[in-house]
Image (cartoon, rainbow, N blue to C red; front, side, top):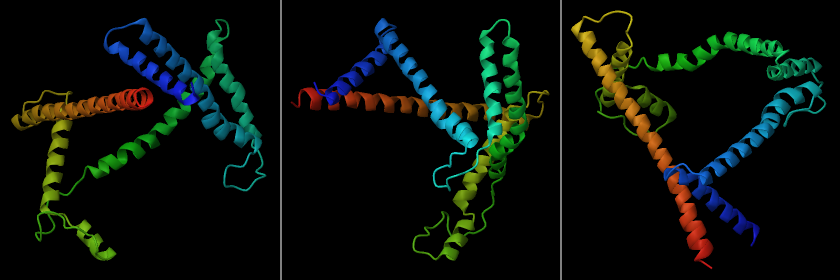
Length: 245
């Protein structure tokens, strides 16, 4: 049996073993689940060194030049102080000295908390800005935005800057949806206004529609993975590997 055949049989065996949980919980599935977790843990150790510790810590400390830079970069040996601080985290397994594990945790939490203001603004600031959409058309020349293929750069930019009726309608639906969803989360006071109460009900339904669409896309992604593995078992292993010989 060649190395290719061995990999093919191993892939089919692992695929059938993992999908056997769809029938019921069994030891066959448990074996491959634990094997997958063991391989994932080993891969994480290698990835921790190659993608984080070596590139972000070791190379900067000893002065290894990054790819595409001039060699001979002087090292920053102050980074060596991070090693004992990081090793303190492993004292969590010691009953006598487990208090030392709180030192790196406190440092990480302090640095993380200080960065969250900037992280929050970089993540949600553009979303807030993009939610302010124009709802009034700026031109009545066409219902939809015409194509810009073959136009000069200035003419194409002028077409894209116009707000057409179809785009304004989409923006209006977006703004109404946003306001209804936000009004649903007004839990701090009793809502007596009829308009606001109807907006909260509409916001609840719109949230359910959105969550349903997300759930549907998740299910379709699972089916995509299933179809890919079944194609591998049926086409590559059975039809081409066994019956094709």
